[in-house]
Amino acid sequence: MEKNANALNWFEIPAADINRAKTFYEAIFNTKMEDVAENMGMKMASFPVDMTTKVSGSLTESPMHKPSQDGAVVYLNANPSIQTILDRIDTAGG
Image (cartoon, rainbow, N blue to C red; front, top):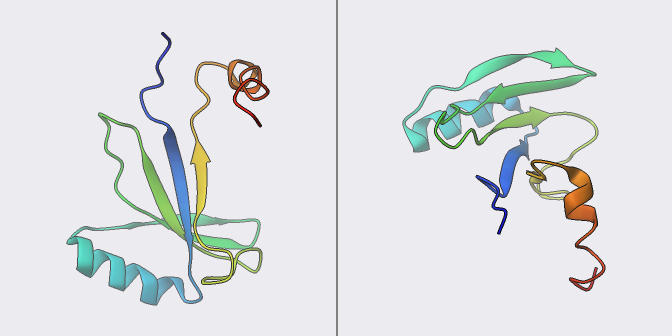
């Protein structure tokens, strides 16, 4: 049976004020977040990466995603091939 290392690959938590959100998450998780270069009008701050699991995520401030309206965006791991995952959808009832 083929097994992915992690089903979760990346997540994004929308924030209305990324600096305020970054301060909050750094305080509650007792960690340091890194600012990421702005991309397509989206400001980001990333959580630390656990290199054993290679799973991480970020806070995002963007007109595309509104906090409390859209919720977190979760990216799932389809390793080694998206086609392998797509081929299972019909038999799984999708």
